[in-house]
Image (cartoon, rainbow, N blue to C red):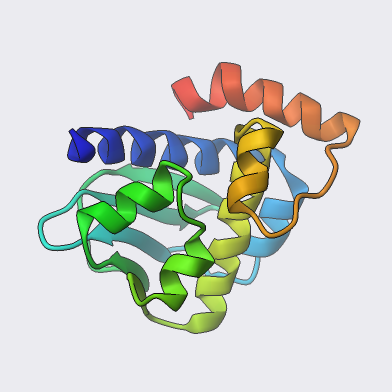
Length: 159
């Protein structure tokens, strides 16, 4: 059951990042430092699931739920830890501090991914849930509400 939940969450996270990389200036600014062809993955040990993202033509592209060797990989050491993080029971920074997740690649790029996912969670999650897992939540402006609407009704379905 946890595997199915994580596959579903990874699918929606991938689609959400793909959508936001087209329309959100903050996301575009963050990923502008990466060269085209840059890839990152989330991988849950020992046998998946995984999330694979590629930067292509200045935007992020969701490549699927298969694991590929990437420029940056965030490993979750057990399925239970990934489930706690992605079911909003445990903040990522706490999981990392408890050594439930590790990073292979440039730590600076890992921080960019952390900021991307914070932004995605701010827009995707209701405030009462986001407050439990994010250290800070910036207030949503009018343009953020438009992004949120687009994310819900177009981004998550079609990327």
